[in-house]
Image: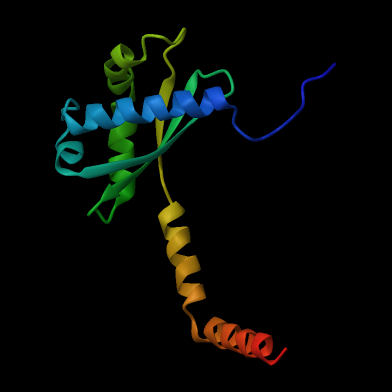
Length: 137
């Protein structure tokens, strides 16, 4: 029998991803990374996606109050090995410590675009027309 192929993450991947997210967040909050840019920036870690073998953790982060996200992402990736070492104590139950990489989280931009579309006059007009049709029936 072959395993079913699915792109959805397993429960274990989700659980470990959340543990890694919490560990990275604590390291950043405590200011353990000695980099001026990282120390001065408030960084939100919104999600960590794990690979199927749990050896790679991709952390999606949003630097708040900074216009150039790329510089912060580059700084985090430069210190990824140090951060990996610091989160090791909180993830002792893992057989392998995952390699950590950082990516810019663009989901907030997508949410903003969808919200702007829903608030546009064309959509509001269509919604009010549909509501009028429902009342007539």
